[in-house]
Image (cartoon, rainbow, N blue to C red; front, side, top):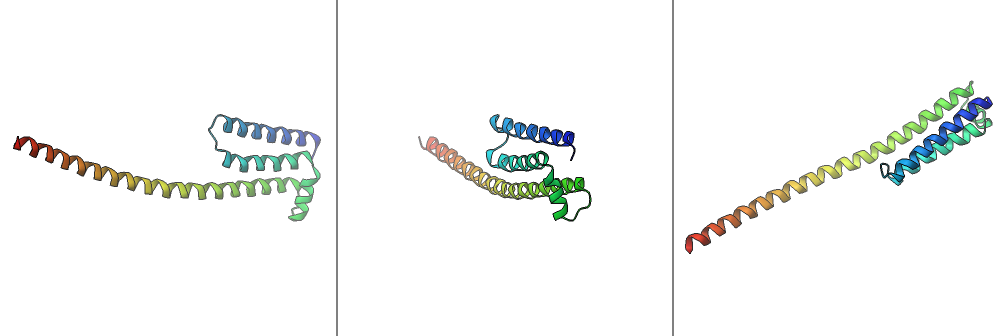
Length: 128
């Protein structure tokens, strides 16, 4: 990697990490998810700051051109994040479904109780 590429990569990683911290501070991103993004940013910063890591990763993965190894690493990190967020989304969908059913059952019970109360009040007025 050229020094310019390393500087641009380092700056981009720092900007992403600053954005993640800003989103956490504004409560638009939860801390548990920010850890994954910050870890990815730190990993990319380490690769950008130490150019030899790119060559080491490329040789470990048997990739001829070191720039391709950056693409492969970014793709892997993206896939891990996508899988994690899919699992979280699936869990939230199931919870939302369960809560919707519970609210519907509660609404049905409330409607039945209101009908009983209205009937008992109307019966009480007729007797008076």
